[in-house]
Length: 106
Image (cartoon, rainbow, N blue to C red; front, side):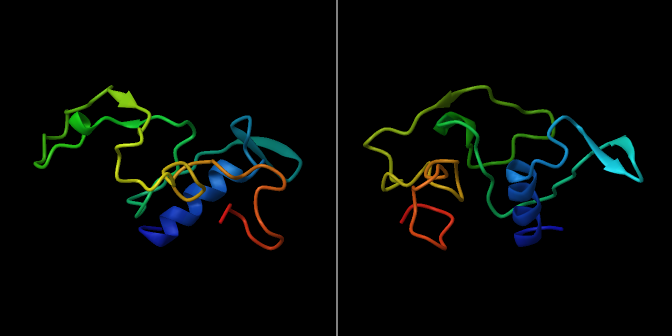
């Protein structure tokens, strides 16, 4: 899937214990598991670090451009301190972090 479907697959891949060791079961056999996600409308980060502003250029940098600069958003960021809550990160996904029936802290 793309966009919202890709978001769903990405979050399932992060949260599901299926394939945690790179394999899944099929007819009592262990087979390799590959998950392909294309163009999610947002991604989930597994740490507090986010791409630095220098890694987000306003113009396409070509197919071979990469950036390895990451930082933790500070109080001056425009993220309203929600930059790591579930949906964008894994913050708030511990037991008791949210009201019953809710998956994330509100």
